[in-house]
Length: 260
Image (cartoon, rainbow, N blue to C red; front, top):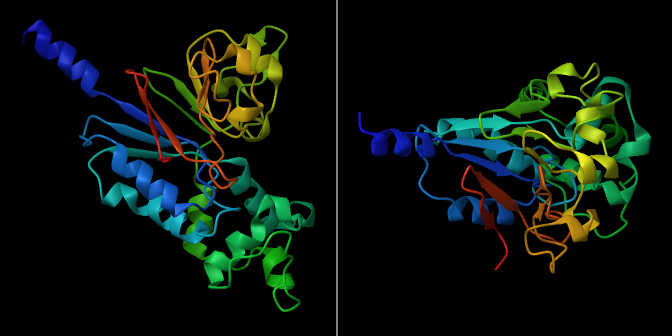
């Protein structure tokens, strides 16, 4: 086999990391339409937060759950903090998470039961409150899927995680060395954004507009865009919060966006 063919085969193993979707099928479908034709050598890694805020959480979950049956590419769907939070709600209740309108949980509930899209700062109706705060509206197959979502993924290109990597006295921990993986879903540590060095980490969770703009090597004049630090790349570009959805192709570092 010639060296050119070997090089092509290596480059053909592409990974497309996709940021937080938050119930926005419009942005999800548009972003997916911008990706190149996928092959059996390709992997799509969703970084979590499929639900809440946007009006179509149920539809996003259905799309991601069934995508493996519709493409030849490998599909990896990671757990986000919003999936983790709803599992806590289902298992033992967590009103402090589901009731604040800013978390967008009512929109997720109504997408599953067929209710109207909530207005800004709207709370549940009296007849909705009990099932909404219990999480009992989630279909069993969806709950099983949520429970099976992994906390992280790694390939030859990068480490993929929803929120980031925690630090220890000896430095930042590899996900496999983290004793409680929940931290990988909720972490917001500026020290990680600024000072992590090592294998590339691709993460979501913290909107790029809140990351240190002076450290981004990708369109630093646009804080809402993908954020590229030295060894970390943030791709939560605010989908479900008035922003758009972003994908990063590795190893080529091509960027795809759902905005016009």
